[in-house]
Image: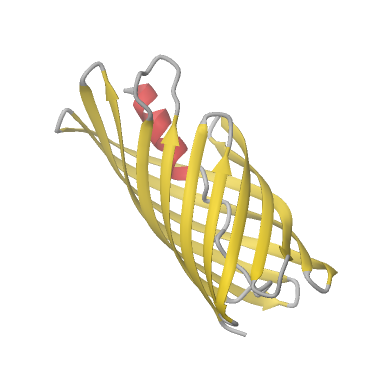
Length: 205
């Protein structure tokens, strides 16, 4: 059970560094995202897999500072020796983001998010336990408008949950269907985890 809880915690926190699929170099927006998660675990023939939907908000409070917040609901499962472990997960995030212009089309990003994650765990269809943990993610990276309608971003993030620390990399591409709406595709990679993110973002200029 301890291993199951560790895996669930990884799902709660991995990939939540930013309201990540965003663009326009604007910092006042609302974003809806779908994420698909897979983790290869030593000793298990099957991957730990899940998916979630999240709502993220960003509000520019000063010229170079934004407040970010989010809510996520997820489901995840793992099969071990023929036994299915399921988790229903919710996560709340709140943080701050700083940005500085490197050029007319490129911003430097630095920030942190604090996260509370809760999970209800079923083993073989029977309720087993609840998990409630706090953690934090720090991130640093660059956002750049590669073309008039295409933004490319890259971030490094460090995630801490109690005595566990992971370092991951986020790659993001966002295409603007209008000046204030973008469609995004993101990929997050750390030691054992892969996360694919699809999102739509509405900006308020």
